[in-house]
Length: 88
Image 1 (cartoon, rainbow, N blue to C red):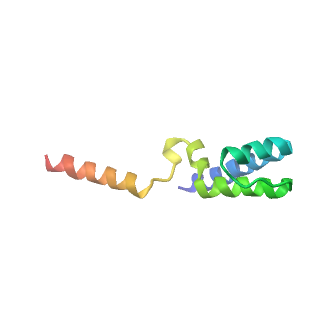
Image 2 (image 1 turned 45 degrees about the vertical axis):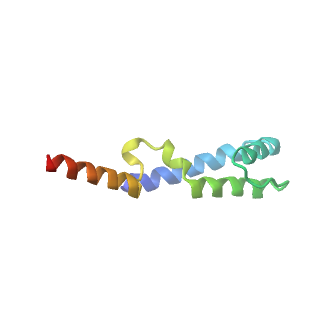
Image 3 (image 1 turned 30 degrees about the vertical axis):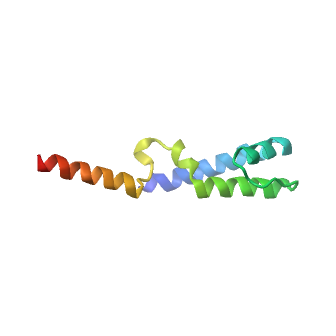
C-alpha cells in the first residue's frame, strides 16, 4: 500500500504540529492521559508522546479502513472464514 506510508507520515507531521501548538500544561495532561512520564522539558515531552503514538499506532485508527494495515489475527480470521465457507 503505497499511500499508507505517505498518509502515516502526513498524519505524524500533523500530530507533531498539534502537540507543538499546545501549552506545557496541555502537553502534561496529554502525557497523563497515556500514563507517560511527565517532564518539564517541552521538547522531551512532545517526543515522548509522539514515540508513544508511534509504538501504539493510534495513527492507524485515523486511516480509512481500506488503508489500515491488517493484523495477523485479522488475516487469520479472514482466511478461516473463507475455508469454512468453501467447505460448506
